[in-house]
Length: 335
Image 1: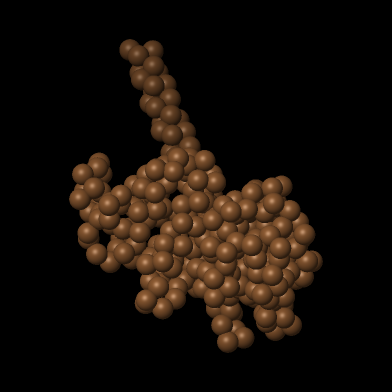
Image 2: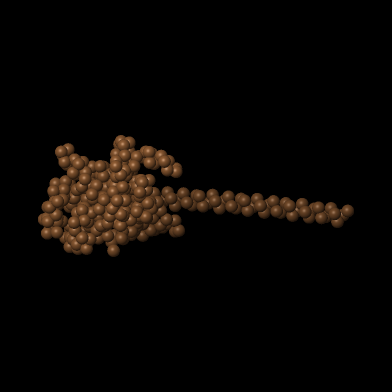
């Protein structure tokens, strides 16, 4: 009887020890999760303030460059310096600035860039630029035409599909169904929702396109980089070979062309009679820029954070149009 009681007592003790161990482990896990959350919030808050500080610094640099040379924005200026790194006391801050007018503004696809009497022809030119760009990234021509039409239908305000386009009837038939936006793109990633734009096509197209908050195509020829040669070639409707376009970029003056006329008068350009009027009077090309994209990456210990800011210069001030967190490609590829 006595041994039985001792055995029961031992079982009770073991049970109590087991319960205490379980409780201790549970408390420790909760404490660890709480600590990790608090630590992450602390790093997040600190990283945001570092990002805002970097943003303020870049705004000052951009504004100074703009005031020093309002009529010419080019890659020799301070804002275009690559590999800008700021080692802080407890963090590592990296920033890179892109000219958002060195790309094709998707929201300009339905643009009327001249008088109403020439509306169809002018819009036809904008369509052809995107069509040639898609062809330059190895999209089959008929498929490229479908994509251009689908983008136009996605952005326009009506529900009537064009001949090769797609409106609500198509998107409601897929799984999961959704409606067309019938408005300009807010973010370039919205392209993935448009018929025909696969992940592969999107990745190829991404370095050459953007979605600005206006319906006008205005490209700064002074800030197009060598890896963007297919885009400049498309602006010239592929009437100049890619190798000649690369040579054109390589021979660009260090401080860029001082005016659109300087570019138009180049031997390679002035022979392009069919599009010369578009380039010279259509407002498609420029040597100035008003939109810039800043990507800031902050590293604190093992914590990484990225902020993408869209900046706009207007009336000698710079406004932050939008911010995105954890998005964007950090490094340029100027190979």
